[in-house]
Length: 88
View (cartoon, one colour):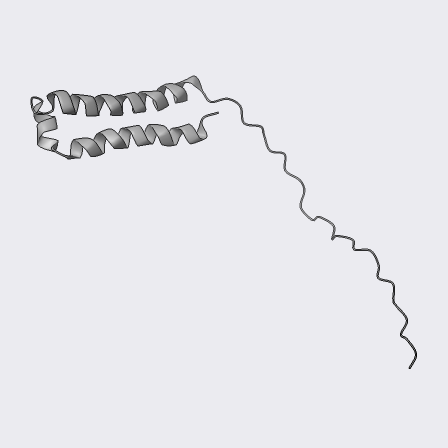
């Protein structure tokens, strides 16, 4: 039985790009106010927890919050930490 001939395949050419390329603007450094708010939230959250431990029972609105003071303090600190992901 005769051997079949090997067909040559044409080289792959990718399809023409139908989209026009979009230039992405390079992101510059963060605004100084962003940094102030970011670090401020972390410090205020830490201060909230320290004041809660030291004088939480003497401050009326903190005494009313009870254990929710931990949630408030950690929420402030975590929001500041989450802001660090967008800090340039």
